[in-house]
Image (cartoon, rainbow, N blue to C red; front, top):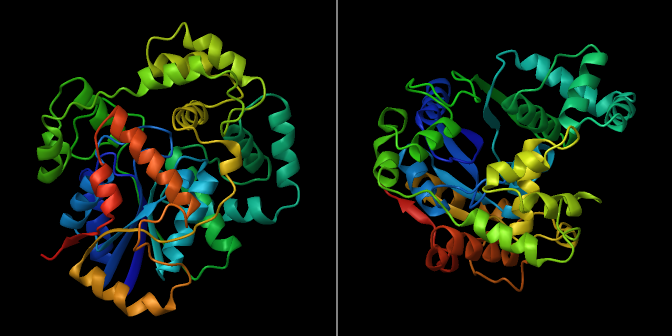
Length: 377
């Protein structure tokens, strides 16, 4: 039996995710699928429009066997950290294959780029030289790869794929790669095709447009009457105005604190604030993550922990049997008791769930009960 790993955010789960699951089951007839999933906020710092427990239930109902949580402290950081901790958790659960979507179908180009980044002694100095000219890290990385005769890598999923492959190579994980070329453009928020990006669907929901054809029925039923507006910006604005110094928060570089405080007074919503802060040096996504860290009070001195535990959010009968078969081989504990004193990362996760509950949807009963969702179908 093949053990397949997926890293996902499911914001929301859509037909593209069904396509990925079907492709896995088509290629690997006898397989078990484990998803490492971000919880309340995404890698780009955005709020998840479905809570992690609803996302888990949806995933199990659509063919996933085990869902584990990628803790907030790792899931809202750069692609390299996001990938590092996700792959570490999936490797702990002994996956033999990692499946992901990419804009390119030539995975060998990304593998060669990963090797260049890891093993070419010139790479880091070239990146630093580009960044010293004032451009952001993703652009500097792409320019360095092109200079060293590698392919251009600048689309979101290819950059994540690069980070996944680097982690596998760097740690000598015995994990094969199965990439699936995306059938849609991540930046397209207007298409009405059956498979579109999650941002397209969120845009449709916000604009009260039909999205029934783009998601499975169980997702549609949860979202069709859901108000996905949150108090995110209001609470963020209060936090920025009330803090004397924002430099203690993760990703707030020196000098940005003053810029943020200036921009908050001329911004009417989160999008405006990000655009007003954004510069050539700081990408939209980096600013979005930084603001999320301010909202959630994630300080720089909290960013010193590694994976401490495995939190199982849900499993199928097959998934439960698999977990029972490998539990004696695990080096990380499975989180059974919700003990925020024992695990620093869990203490942070509890705070994040409390903030999510205040600004959007109350999940604290399910959070503290810590009971995996079981799908016995």
